[in-house]
Figure 1 (cartoon, rainbow, N blue to C red):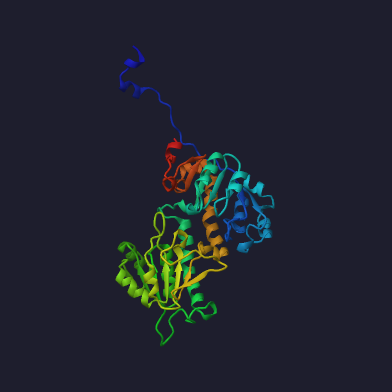
Figure 2 (tube, rainbow, N blue to C red):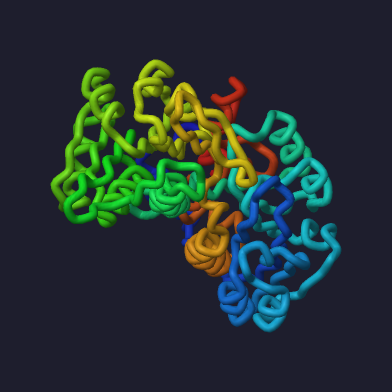
Length: 399
C-alpha cells in the first residue's frame, strides 16, 4: 500500500513529533544609556537606583557622561551604582540594547550595531520616513515606550506622563496668574469671602483627570467638557467630588469660557488634537485669563495656541495668556525620570528573565504591543498608516 493510500485515521495513530515548551533562559543585558540630544529634553530613562538593581542582577550598564545631570542625577551616583561612565557616544550606541527617552537622531542610528535593539519613545509626529528606513537598514528591533501595555490594556508610560502633565498644568497656571509673571495678580484657590478660581478642562482622560483633581484640591470650581458621556461619568466616579461636566456643546462652552480664569486643553485625536475652542471663543475670555494647552504636542485644542519654549513659554492674544510648551513633563525632569524609571526597570528585568528581546517579544503581549520594527521589518499598523505604507503583523514573524 502506498503512503498516499493510507486512510487519514491511520495518521492519527502514527507517532508524532512532540512539541515541548521551551523554557526561558535568563540572559545578561548590555544596556547603553545615552545623554539626550533633543532640544529641551532633560529626562533620563533610568535612575542610579534602577541601574544599581540591574547591576545586582548581573547586567552591564554603560552611561554617557552627563546623561542624568539635567534630572539631578550626577555621574558619581551612576558610578557608585555600578555603571560604566564614558564620554564616547559610539560605545553607548554600540551596546546591544540602547535605552533612551527621545527617538535617536540619524547620526545616532548610524552608530548602532546591526541587529541591536532600541527602546525609546517614538514620538511619531516628530520623525519622518527616513528615520524608519534608517532603522530598517540596520535591522533594528525598535520598541516604542508609549505603545507598551499593561495586563489591563492600559499604556503605563503614557498614563504616567499624562498625570504629570495634568498636575503640572495647574501649577503652571498658578504661576502665570500671579503679577510676577504678568498675570492679573490673582491667587489660585478659594479664599474665604471671595469667589473661587474657575477652571475649564477640555478632555476626560488621564491628563484631564489629574488637572481637574489638582484644581479641586486647591479649592477651584471646575467644569469638564468631553465628547464622550461615558468618559465624563468615569471621571466623576474617579474624582468622587461634585463637579460640573458637559459634552462639547458650543453654547455651554462659550458660557464657561467667558467666566473662567483658567482653561486647560487635554483632548487628543488619532492624527492631531481636535480644535474645540475657536479664535472667536478665545476672544470673549476675560483679560488676564490663562490657557494651558497640554495637547500642543499634537497641534493643540485652542485655535489660538502656538508652540512656545521653556525659555519663552507664553504669548498673549486677546489679552489671554497662552502657554504652549510641548512635552510639559520635561519641565520637571527629576519627577518624570523617576516615574519613567519605575516603569522601565521591571521591563528590563522581564526582558532578562525571558532570555532577551526576541523571547520577550514572543512571550509577552504587552511588550509585543510596543514593537514597531522587528529585525528591520515594520510591524505596527499605526506607524504604517501614518505614511500610508505596508507593514507585516508581528505575529507572522514569530511563527
